[in-house]
Length: 312
Image (cartoon, rainbow, N blue to C red):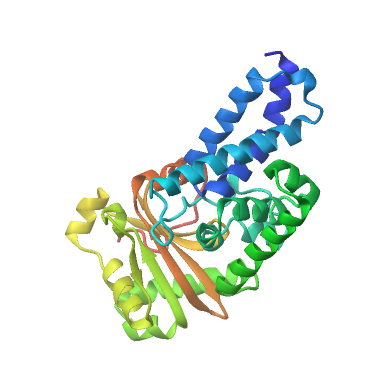
């Protein structure tokens, strides 16, 4: 491959990775899809490709659709039993993030909701909302009509909006204060305060620190408060499982505040919060090592704020 063709691909790599992550919800799978796209670009008759960026977008999108359909066929991504891979704020895979719609499309909440869409609906929604593709181009990428593209996006947008908790964008500083207060209440055992800080329809989901075979779900404020209180209660067994004394930081993950548990510079868990109207609307607890790989890599490369709790 000549240097011009390589440079052209590399110029698109970040955009392709961001698109693939939104479609797959997994950084590792997104990287694989981008690498497969590169192999196809390498083998293609590039002289007959009129618009390389469009060609690359179509290839990576359809590779992602194949992965989604295959995973669903193997029941690896059953709706309601899957969590996306969290990414630390500033990770280039989260871009573009100039508009509210672009930032929302990569939130853990919306990535989870998009599991309820068909693969084509998901692709049309992401291409339109996150990358502002016109329906004519979406139709060409997905091999559907322009009318079908409009219908897919409309249905996807309606479903995501109907099921999305909150709605308006929350000021990061305000969200951080709410999460810090929630964490303080959890560690101190103030269950009544935890209940008061949850919205009436709050939900929580956890992978059980990576040990549960199925996701654990909590759908009442009282059960969520009990789960949070138990989860944040330090014990010798938890310290052994984590590999030592844990520092608890508050950071932005996929645009939302999260409590990040760190042992000697290694992320061992994260709880992402969704805040609405001054209260906590949802929590997602992620502790499986394979879901934290990229977050770990990013954590080692940035200067975190001082921990809220330095020896949990």
